[in-house]
Each structure stands twice: as C-alpha cells, then as structure tokens.
Image (cartoon, rainbow, N blue to C red; front, side, top):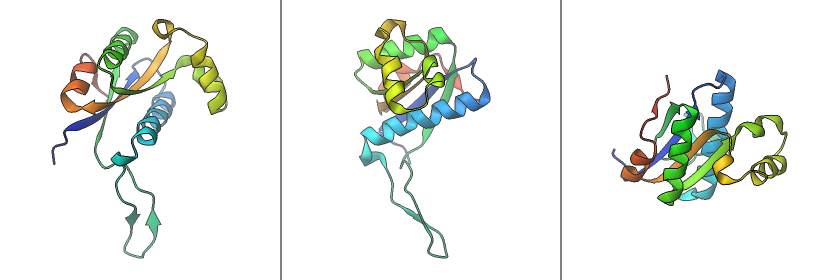
Length: 136
C-alpha cells in the first residue's frame, strides 16, 4: 500500500545507540499525539488478549550529521510540516516540563538538535529530509 503522507525521523549520526532509540521514540510520540488520525486499530492475538494500536503507516528512520539535520529543520518549518524536535539538552532533564524549558531557553536557529520527526505530504517530507540516509 502506498500512502499519500509520510512520517520520517532523522537522528544525528554521532549519538550513542541508546540515545538514537530514545530520541526516535519521543519524536514519533509527538507526531502520533498531534495526529490521532494516523493511529490504527487495537491489536488482538488469537487468545483474545488486546494490545494498543500503533501508527497505521510506516515510519522511515534516517540519520544525518548536525548540518544536514539543521537544514532539514529549516525546510520542515518553511514547508509548515508537523514537526517534533529533540535537543541535546533534553538528555539531561528528567521530565516533560523540564524538556520544554530547555527548548524554550534557546532561539530556533541555535537549537542543538539531535533529532527531528516530520509528518506531511510524501513529496514534501522527502524534500525536507533530503541528504539524510537510512539508519543502519
């Protein structure tokens, strides 16, 4: 099945493995939270045990260096795509309020981005993440 829209996550290529996974999880939660229409139906196994719904479309996970990530951020904003971000400072906080505070303290162009997720029309997302490569 081909979708008209796309979810893409870009993580910085110099992060530790646990950081890449953590950032990806948080970024996708932002997209899912803002766009509940993307959620599929709950799952149920053969024994009748139910499980939470997942996103109803694939998510592509990419990696990039800091400059490519900054460029993708600027393109996402200029295209007005739904965007979630994760900054390096957020690794040192312990909760959502503190995360928002460390982001609020830094101007947009000075954010130390380590991850970005975007959602929107497939073509616009592809152009936004140009230069990033598939995460190995």
